[in-house]
Image 1 (tube, rainbow, N blue to C red):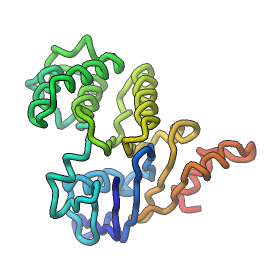
Image 2 (cartoon, rainbow, N blue to C red):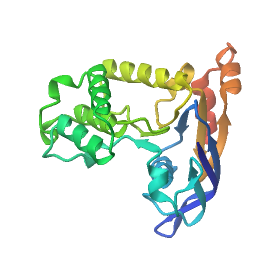
Image 3 (cartoon, rainbow, N blue to C red):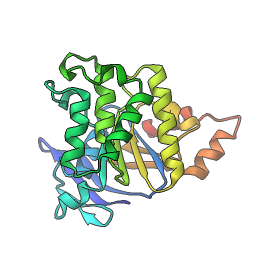
Image 4 (cartoon, rainbow, N blue to C red):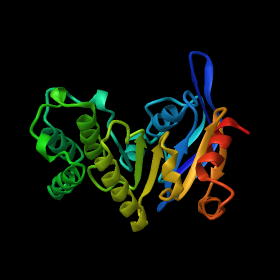
Length: 241
């Protein structure tokens, strides 16, 4: 679903990502972890062409993001960051705008409202987003971004700002989608506790590259070893020790 070869991204003359290779398949729920400033958000932006690569290639569903940007983006569902939401729209209006702009059927609106209900967003559907709390805006950005059935979901710190009940509901929703087997989910997160049970794979971004790649087999081995903890192993990997 996602193929990245020798990706390089620079900002201000400094290499953020360098010679990065990565593959993500359908049916995987991948946690992308790393210390602050390691380039997680830059990598997520490069996948949809919001950040230009200085080297290498990114392909989504076989489409090169640099040359077939629109086709690649059509295969991506990207949660909208709270600060990018339009203050003058309500959540309901935002969902309808996204549905119409993507040419989705009316059933997509039904699915969006069902997810909004699961996340506890329903009481604020008709409130202007500019007057809503960070958590409410985060929920609206998630629902709007996931509107439709795109096969690659990109979530950049999307659990931030959510209350515990909503975090639990969203994690359950993601687990259900992963189990369907037709969606690849990439979650950039600092919440490595997800790896204790839910994530099928965890990739550690370090020094501009994927430094460690813990697949399901490696995670299961750590999970069942009483002498180890997933959290401790991932922290060590993030430190490069």
